[in-house]
Length: 155
View 1 (cartoon, helix red, strand yellow):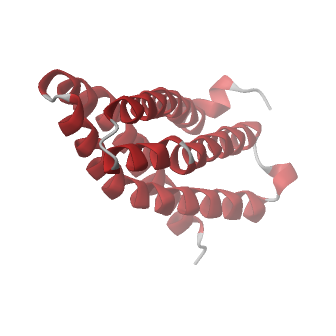
View 2 (cartoon, helix red, strand yellow; view 1 turned 30 degrees about the vertical axis):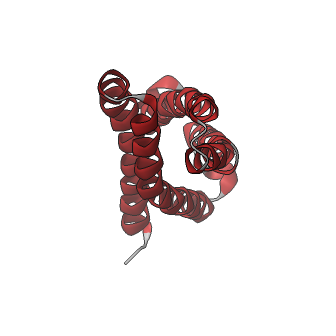
């Protein structure tokens, strides 16, 4: 038995968790939190949400990278279709964006909430919001490449 079906399942599950979580946070939770909660409560909410979501994203990042690389190596890098290489490149970009979010604005958000510095927390959250929007878009680009890549990219 080949490991490819297992790798593919883990790969798709990780992407589903990550992109689906970002979509939910950006499209569903963010607008309601902005309308219903004052800045202190809203920032504390996001601190808690990210505190629960980001460990899952780390797991998804590791699983996505490991399974994607393993599948590309299984067929041989030069034999992998062009759209696989594009997915890998976009995925690496998404991973770098997440790492920046985690190590920079998220850490500033944590410090601001701990210090009850609501303007600084709002600024950190605004930066996270923009980067999550970008990563969600890139996630959908990756999904498009995965599902229709052969049609979208010649080679």
